[in-house]
Image (cartoon, rainbow, N blue to C red):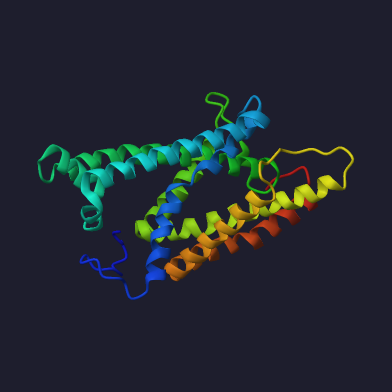
Length: 273
């Protein structure tokens, strides 16, 4: 296995802190499997969200798992265990190996990464602004952010805000540091979402008209997902405490802002500042 944090040598010797190296390796892996949750941001635009949202998440995750496992199988078959352990750019190495031409792999994979980046940015730019728009519509953000363009039927101001924010974050540090910001916070909320399901089920038991989704394997599958998510948070903080805590600190800065907006909404319930 190749480690990006330099804790293991290329000769295959064990790192001084194997658990820290393992934790560092898990961070980008789990980040790569993220993104499924943004489907919920577009639930208001779905014709039948009760049916389509769960299917979108399930099929999306299964598709990503199948794709990633297939890619890793190709890496292993083409390079072997030793070759895979001695490269930090396996995709480029595979292209070099298949084409029998050195250094062409880096150029080919640079183009593929650029194309993939556009896909990732598109979902971030067009899904996340829906959260800002919904907050503004509920009186928890500036009123202008809730505006929907009559021409494109999209929250144009919210999209511009998201683009500005992303540019600031992109200029704030390296890819690895930004990934630590995001992973620790994302998986913290994945675990909280699973915890919320226990709360909802407890409420349903106290009601005569039970509502909600059927969750296969609940409560065991839900508990497993919740614990696994918080283990990822813990390993991310352990492997990169500085940047992980910066991300969590930025999240906590939102708490006083939230309470300010709540007070404003209670004072003037029909006006969003």
